[in-house]
Image (cartoon, rainbow, N blue to C red):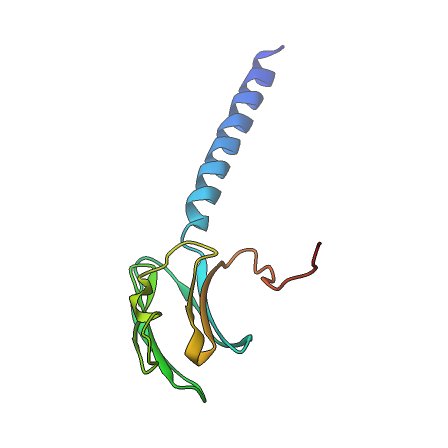
Length: 125
């Protein structure tokens, strides 16, 4: 191996390591919160750790107030009778959900990069 071959290999390794570090670090903040009522998406918004907001979701069944703070999502208020969704706590990782059965409402966090459908595509027995 010549000296230039060794330099080329080192440069390619450095580029590879920085690419892996950069891509893994940047994917952590690319999440969305999606709210569905009766399986129909009624609200969608990107979330990050430095973004805070509240959103009131009104449906034919009632209302829920969704709170996003420091990348964590929770339901802070609802006019349903059992309040299970309010007491569910916060979610912050992809795939976690909060459900309000009386309002037919699902709050879900998805990865914003993939945007893969979360619908069932088949059944097995």
